Image (tube, rainbow, N blue to C red; front, side):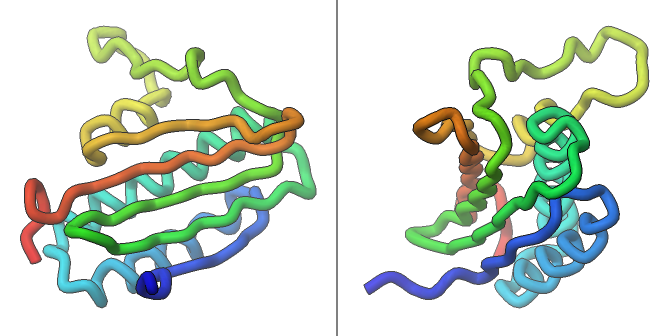
Length: 143
């Protein structure tokens, strides 16, 4: 039997909801004894992923929602974000060239830097996406 999730929430796909999401993620990770710096990095990566879902998958439409589940298993934290937006082609997601001097657009770069790996999977019937991000605790995060 697997352990219960550290956090499972569903929230409106609106920028205004993200402060509550950041606070909930911060509490869940702090309760695991992660270092403050690691917690801050993970909270930022989750926030960026949520902002990208709102901005790009839902295209800032009203009425969407996002589910977040955080699990700790076998020395890893797994973050899963699920939306019900139109399917996104994972091949379109690339980090920005950091030599370009312009604001914004760093979400994928932040996720790449923070997580050990991540994967976006469109759901069947072109309705929804699941973004799974994994961070190894023993490799990069002090308990």
